[in-house]
Length: 390
Ligand SMILES: Cc1ncc(COP(=O)(O)O)c(C=O)c1O
Image: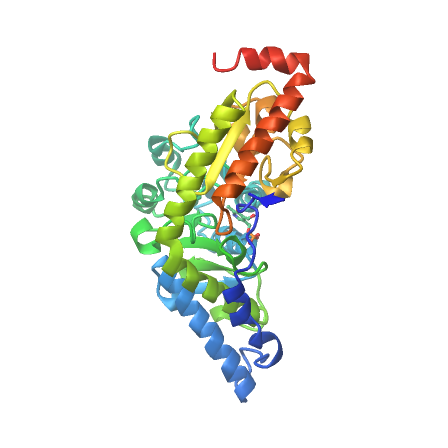
């Protein structure tokens, strides 16, 4: 099976595994044990990883807070900022196409009396900057806008949103999970206060992530997970030393290889799009013409039953939406204005480090065969496909 679902997760790079291994067995110490070598060794490894993550995102090492992943990082940013916000700031602004790991904590705030603005997007998936400016009020505590979308790969103009949020005294958070390792991410240039990352999206292990907390912004966060005071009190719990080491190593590799890899993967993505148009026909790109991740392609297939399409695709691993919610029509595609049928008949391709030109050729042929088969077996689909493009 050809794996084309790198937005869901990525395999751990063998170089990352190698870096992690000693921290399971030999150097297994608790990074907060201060009285012996085992603890010091673990601590040193964690601090090295912190510098590696910081380097890739353009932050200072002290601005990196390790978490169990991006869901927790988003929660720390959103629930943490809300809990510390002054009582006259009980409003949060976000976007309809955010990952549920952002939408859910925002909605949780809504359930506890906050006002939540979920801004719509245009048909390409981008939020309108004037709408963002209008939505932010002196009562806004936090604005959360993702950098790269996990389904359609489009890149929001986060750097342009920063002055809008700051002019009103609000904090700006970005879920930058899908961008890291795929396109350059510089938190200082973006002007964000908080940014979430996850190791397993860039060939690191699952269950480890980080929140960038701009220097000074920690005073505006009340940590939801407290305990032994780890991570300067922002995230309690024994540190996942092997995971953190793996995250650092993954950032190190990505920093060195990203420019070439982005070019290579971008060319393969363009080839996939070309081949799908030639061989399958009746396909349109979701989020077309917006700036996007090099390895992302999201296409809808006209006049086809989404379920038959997905069931038929036995030779490639793709998805119809975020991995956690694949049974439902994607809320991201619905926000672009697609109806339920079109959203379900959409395919998210995520190309990655292991993807080859042969994989792309095979994937395009397989999709074309399955589409043709589904169209042949459904008269309704044939009629609709004949009308596609109008
Ligand atoms: C944009 C985005 N945010 C957050 C997450 C959640 O990350 P994690 O799996 O580390 O909790 C994901 C991954 O599914 C994602 O794609």
